[in-house]
Length: 172
Image (cartoon, rainbow, N blue to C red; front, side, top):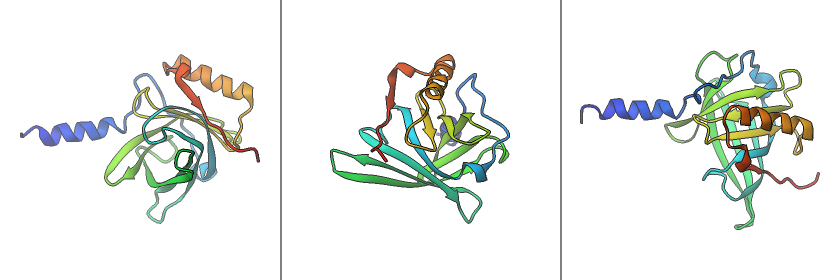
């Protein structure tokens, strides 16, 4: 029983880790990252299962963190689902490594592993292991060559790109 606190601490830290052999970006500029991002592709997971037209809105919080507002359309229920969370830098604010929480004191990893540093138009994010991957863009569609480059990069890093789900957004 005396090892329980150590075990719990280890489990919580593992949720905010970085997949082995993967590096996060540096030179990150939060103010340029804020705003709306559209999900282009993801590896499936329970909290977005069955959703389409997924987007994320990032804004500053009063406490210096980032407000995260995720939404997606649930066709089965005929409505949008919205989840509000918060994110904080784990390292320095110019390193693309954050912890994000939608459920009280529990945090998950938000590791920025690829970013268009010139225009901040597309990004690739990994979770704590290779089971979590997202490709996001500033618009609902990503140029096919850029999308393919990101998928190839993810495949090289060991992600199961053959299992990617490509999001569907209504025509604007």
